[in-house]
Image 1: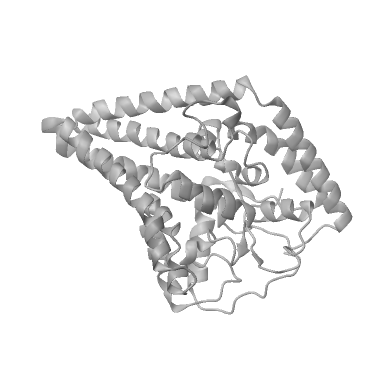
Image 2: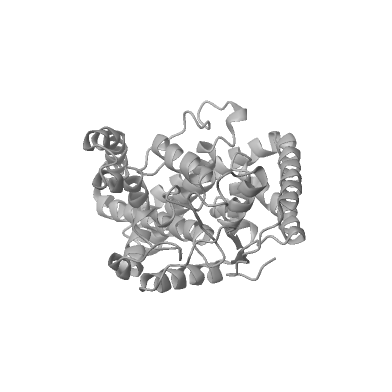
Length: 367
């Protein structure tokens, strides 16, 4: 295992990469054969926990005039939103549980509790991000179009403000993701028509309206005299969820040790199965922690394994990691991991460092 925050620029030979890919394929095949009732039970228990947390949180917010109960209500409702977004919604929308044929918990039907419509997320995240992971110019999640997170990105004056911009984004992360999916930068560049932007904005407007009415009109009005406490509690729970999701996602993609590649480089054209696996591993980072931490992160604390096998139920990632990490070590492939505190600090330092003007690194053909 590499020390946290380090990234070696070595590349295995073509023969080694082929062997490496074959071993990863074997791991994937083995785990997929084992997927079954155990995973279904895990998801159903998680849904039950999420729903009971939401009910408990909303009931406590009704007594929000008492600060301890209001705080407990925010904590429970925030927990519910985190579980729904991270370990249920994100993974269900990836199709990890489609084999269950559940009438609700299926990627074709599930709509999660965030502003971004599931259909938009499937395009920008499931397809674009997971296909072109860390490829500059193809993976729009690299800095989300307004943050400099890689040495290879040319510096612009706007990046001087990125530490403050990132801090603000953290509190409204679900809105940032939703607007990011509309690709405003392509409209400004003349690559996308305003008419198409308007068409794509309509599903977002409908979803955002439902979310705003639910949290800031319906439940407050339903609570009668407790309306101000419920409204404030719902807002606080959304902020809790946004901050947590931001930290987990940034720690899995932007700490030191995560590498980007240039579009059209030898690393992407042509790309073998082994090279694809290598790019996924180099473009991701894991976060170490106890079992409850992995559940709250949606198992995106195992970001490397998620990028290798995004269709496998996330509750399997810990056991997959126990096989992938020694395999990477055996082939001399960097496996970037570290504690939550270390990864948060690493991301913060990277955002600060790359906000300053200095020449971009020359893209490496083999990175």
